[in-house]
Image (cartoon, rainbow, N blue to C red):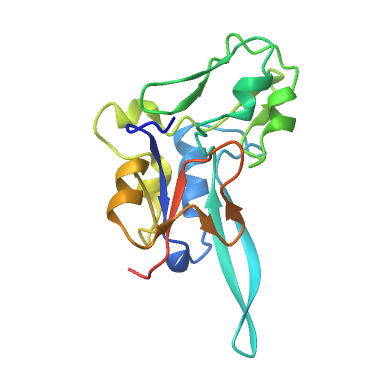
Length: 182
């Protein structure tokens, strides 16, 4: 059943320049070690006309409707909030790593310092204050946002769950790509 309150990332892939400011903003806000990234920016070369162009995909936890991390966690360290955000309770994490292997989006990482899993929580503490996540505020070209996924898909003709390097799958990811230049 579709969650009508589902929150997720909205990404304008055609506007992204691959600067990785979103990733850096996330890392700074979450005080992550140098080798830990909750948000990643991948580059894809795609054909256009007679040549190739770079297309970027900024991604983190997709706050899936059917989260693989939650399904495989023997410690039941994952929960889904009413707004669909998938939250990891690091206190419950045993460090088994099953969630890292299960996530099709490479969104869960193991932190060397304590041997436990960690992932994007969409900056819940900022959202609850009516603010945007650090990655969204860090994007200099405004190609990243958060919103009610159900509403965006319903209201925006160019909204899709398909893009270069990203597609809908069995985990029911909640990132929407707007296929138009702003």
